[in-house]
Amino acid sequence: MIMRVLLTRALLATALSVGGCGGNSSDQGVEHLSFKQALTYSSDTPVTLTGSLLIEGERVRLCDGLAESYPPQCGARRLEVVSLPREMPDMEESSDGRVRWIEQVTVMGVVSGGEIAIGHFVD
Image (cartoon, rainbow, N blue to C red; front, side, top):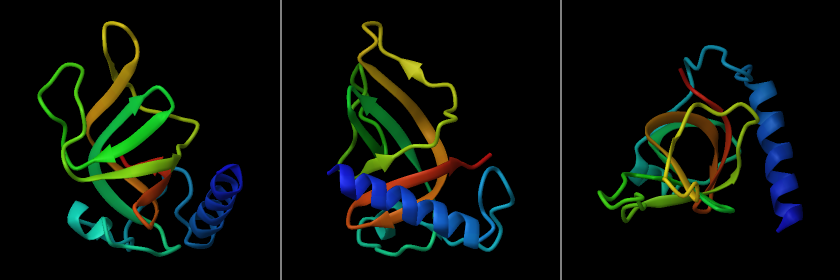
């Protein structure tokens, strides 16, 4: 698991630097996937994707939508997040602090095999 995370981070860093898409630079020319497309997509080329970010303890997922429960849960479609950037946007948090989320966010990252390595959040 640790090796996969390290490899994913290395691939993401290389893809973002080669593509000139590091940091919060312009994301023009980067393919934007629908969530349905992302579920079966696999490539080391960065893409953008819009969804809801949900963090429950150690488990991080990018969801197509959130259920209306409290705290929220992922709907049916989701990608497991294998890495996050250091800089995170402000998130909602459950009263017990166990769950954090953002309802709609666009991210740039590498999607492969039902997982996403998020390079940065798109403004």
